[in-house]
Length: 274
Length: 294
Image 1 (cartoon, helix red, strand yellow):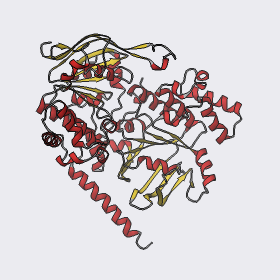
Image 2: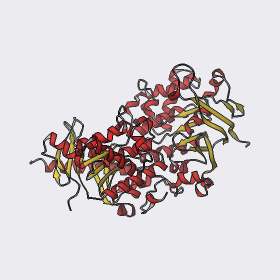
Image 3: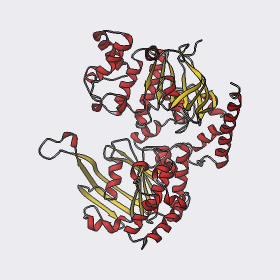
């Protein structure tokens, strides 16, 4: 694929199984990702779906090199980042941002919203000094639909939806090429969820970033994503354009996932189908 | 017919402060599944807690009554009330891991309840617990009885709690978002199981959820809750074909559906939020006026 931002080949990841660790010696390893091949095109939103334990979060974290794969390649913008060290990763971090599921635990409760957004700007030298960073923080807050004066608020003063906007602001402030969004609307009520999805689509149109959107909710993925990767037990069972995947799922597992979603319309007997 | 659950005009308030539940009335008949729908903070769980008489300390019932199987809980003495509720109602929580005692085997957790509430002997309780685990389609009940909660998957834990809930043949079961933390495929199995058990035992079920899909597939009647007030109460058929309240319609418009990707999602409009705030304020004003003379 010519315009791939990410090209992944034969990606393997294993992690130590701490529940089986002997008192002395190393824990046995569990295979988490079992040889994945896929690409993420520049400017697209790719949904990564699957049930708990399927490896979707581990895959996301390996992509942005929060985890180190055992083998395989991860080409990001043409460069293989699968095995490079922390020092070499550091300059790339600005372009690989993440938004977390739970904005409660991912925002430092002792820091103001302004500081939370400004410190990565200073770290990556996007802003030269504190005042500039603060002004940029205000700007990006208005971009995500929050009042600029929220810079002096603390996370606990905000609602769940507002907090998630801060998480988004922190990530997009750096104008990264790639954003990993891991279950970012799962904890929200439907009306906040609809607002956040709206916001993501607008931001994407303005800023043209590439995104991997990890979710267990196929209805949300149907709305937002251009392509979808379906995972099960560390393997990709199906990958397709969103419309194709939903209308003509090739794999029985994809069909099962789709058909297990209760649609908001009354129909007797749905619960009895299996 | 006596409703198994009859909440009449229930208002709950902070000891010093405003109302958290605003004159809520709802009934659940034998064999009926009633949905309690609303967003976080609407008061869904507060209603569930009022039924079991376990409201937080800072909160009290200031008006209205809860009747369980025809009897008012209002003037019952504390000790008698606990046993009365324990015999007639059971609870299925959202998070089975915190609801189960991590240091006790599954067997003990189900049997304790049977011994306590039904007064069975240990031996009878064991036999009944085995039968119950079979009924919730756990394949090797003998083995599961000896396990600890952490050794079970999320779906299995929820099955165990369903078995425990039905153990003492309650008239009413309150389920508080029991499938929210589960994968969709497991959710469907668990919903099917709950529906099945409920129909077989003729239990009344109050099902707390924020998921309109679950309401449509499982429930027969529903109350939509906003800011502690029931804004709409209807049969599920009617709720989905002709939603009456603007808030119900807004909830539906904000819910994404994989089968209708072209429909744009509509977050609640500022006008609607203002209208809802006004409606709540008007309700409170009318209520305050009525209670001036009392």
